Image (tube, rainbow, N blue to C red; front, side, top):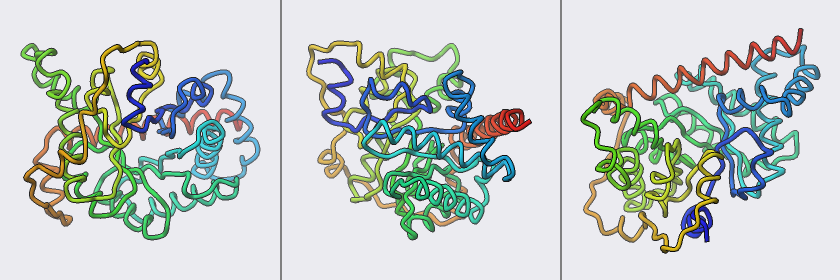
Amino acid sequence: MNQLEALKQFTTVVADTGDFHQLAQFQPQDATTNPSLILKAVQKPEYAPLMRATVAQFKDRDLGEIMDRILVRFGCEILNTIPGRVSTEVDARLSFDTNATVTRAERLIELYQAAGVHTDRVLIKIAATWEGIEAARMLEQRGIHTNLTLLFSFCQAVACGQAKVQLISPFVGRIYDWYKKQAGAQWDETAMAGANDPGVRSVAQIYHYYKHFDIATEVMGASFRNTGQILALAGCDLLTIAPELLAQLSSHETSAQLRPALNSQTAKEQALERVLYDQPSFRFALNEDAMATEKLAEGIRAFAVDTRKLEVLMQQAAA
């Protein structure tokens, strides 16, 4: 048995890619995309015609709508390959606008429905700002399920649970990156691996809190730098993994039995206190967490940059 097969015994494996041709070999349940992954995909020869065809068909529409149609086109292709759900992201430039996020999410869902896709097979990805979480609360009440991304802190996770969002994507690798950079020459890779990895610890804390208090929101670890981080979170509800790391897991045979590092029973036995956030306390808690504040802002900026690059490619295709 290889490590990927072993992991699938305890955790739902999700592919983190816009390259739907890669999906079949790993047989993931779900798939996630983001602006950076879609940008990467449309620059490949096999996907460029898909973008050009979509732009040509809707060139009289505004850029935002054409963008959403490209995202949904990729999402539909992915859904033809997997049995589960696809996550499609709202424009990151709307991360601080609740109403605009809701409007954009509803359009994405309408486009999926027009393509014959049931709402339950789509998760709308939204940055876990206060405004994004409020948008997700409203969308969930309307039957549109959400995936809150760029999640780096416990307060973000708690607020998402309060909003009853479907799923959260706490990032592992970017947390790890921040702490490693802060430590500089003092960083001890061996000592900070596995369960001691700061990104792994963050997801474990959130998982235990959710399971302890029977919060229904699914926890999907994301943004991995190595397979050690992935295996250290075996037992998490879901893990979304880039194709390169899926390939490493599938090529590594394991003789030792993989045991789940996380389980709901252990979470129930922990002595935890319930926490509640309103907007002021959420903003203060996030502000107190320098890592989460920096990585959230950085992530939104990076997705916005790649969205603009995708718009340039769309405009070139329309010319």
